Picture 1 (cartoon, rainbow over the protein chains, first blue to last red):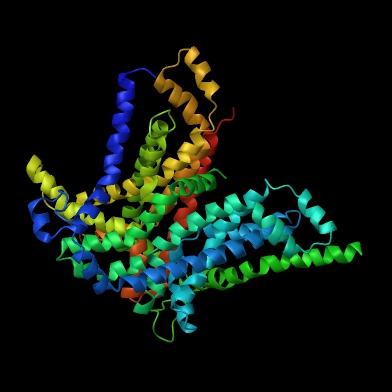
Picture 2: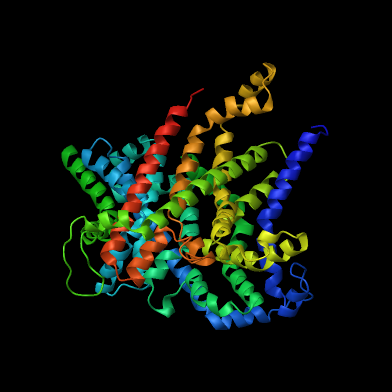
Amino acid sequence: MTFSWNRIGIYGFILAGSVIILFPLYLTLTTAFKTPEESAESLLGLPSSLHIENFVRAAEMSNYFSAFFNSLLITVVSVTFIILLGSIASFAIARNQHSVFYRVMYYFFVSGLFVPFQVMMLPLVQQLSAVGMMNKWGLIMLYATYGLFQCVFLYVAYFRSIPREVEDAALIDGCGVFRMFWYIIFPMLKPMTITLIVLNIIWIWNDFLMPLVILNNAADWTLPLMQYVFESQYAADYNLAFASYLMVLAPVIAVYLFLQRHIIGGVSDGAVK
Amino acid sequence: MQNSAYKSLRKGYLILLLPGLLLLALFYVYPVLSALYMSMTNWDGVSRSHDFVGLVNYGAALTDPRFLNALSFTLQYAFVSTILSNIVALSIALVLVKKIKFRNFFRAVFFFPAVLSMLIIGYIWQQIFYHVVPYFAERLNIEALQTNMLGNQDLAFWALIIVTVWQASAILVVIYMAGLQTVPEDVYESAAIDGASGWKRFSRITLPLIVPSITICVILAMKQHLMVYDYIIALTDGGPGFATESVTLLIYNLGFLNNQFGYGTAVALMLFVFIIVISIIQINILRKKEVQL
């Protein structure tokens, strides 16, 4: 490639774009470490030293660690449910496409993709409070259910690329459906499983509306919900607010720095299917 | 022998399907059916009794200025942000599939917003509109931006659009990149030999070949934006006045603040119908434009 104005334009465009993407994160990072006096002096400058008082105060005010572990537990358990129940259901659906029942089941699972949560929101609150499930276990059940829509859609599409000969051979050898699934089929689904894990973690970890309507008890609050509840208390202290935002984003940023290649690859594979 | 093995196989498949089916029955079918019923009652969500009122709630919505305002805001917001985020994402993807230096780094930067919480991003931008934008507007003497954009009826809409495009483009970039990489190189080469200019190559070759990606991106983005909630909560809470009250926020407020469970559910079902109708229209328009190599 030789020097050309065209190339300069291209680099100028993506550099400008990158600055726009990174600016809010730069502002969050620097403001979180500054004192109010420093921010008053220079809004965008670097902090003079790494003050961690903002973080300590924000963590104490909002009960950060409890919310962090709630988010972690809810995300891990829900994603496990989605992958396990979604993969076995998809296997049954994908391998019985000759049967009307299973074809109907496919459309039934996928139909959920188009239903906004708001349709079910008000009835669910009634339903779950009637059985005492307005807590993180009830929320996990909802994620496990609503995650299945996309999970079945993507897994069933993926099964088309997996040859059936292996299964037939295993069945003739007297291997039961369950053992065959676990030892032969599930490992072959790995690329799609990674995609689904990534998509569902991003969704559940960051979700706000479902925790807002389902989690009654402060002991169950997740990180976004905690931020929402405490937001008004940070109104007076700009630096404290940013320290709190940064603490909520930090786990995701850390994971992204290490695994970005797999995360982007996973999302991109899911989109092409 | 053969027959009994076949029977146990069929039973095995059914057992694999059952746990998922059970969850769907409990937390999907049941609430959807009760939503259909509730939307035809005047229930407030608290009292023990309610009356069946038929389609009254649906009729009431169509003449309710608050619902019509929320619907018109939501549709405008969803259309503008879908168009802008797709244009931005496609432009970035076109650059990122070229042979540029640090391509993986830039790809990681542009995808980054997709993994972040929409609520927290909303809060960060709220601070930007409150503190940072006026700070620069004063120095650059731009009168209109010296006060908080979010407090202004017209500017609040565009503030929401900026935040949405900033974050929503991220995932679209990756989908468009995957689509662009399926366009074979030799098509461009023969076009270049025929003397097609850059814009012509893009509009006559690239664009028709990536229509499947455009379909996915437009439908994904439109559905997501019609259901906007987190940004509204973080940035405007529906204000100033009711200027940015989305249909989703209206449903929440009707159900949990105004005790209009029946009416709120009817509004939610109307949102569902809008999403379906708009998706079908988009699929039909875009399918006609699809070409095969």
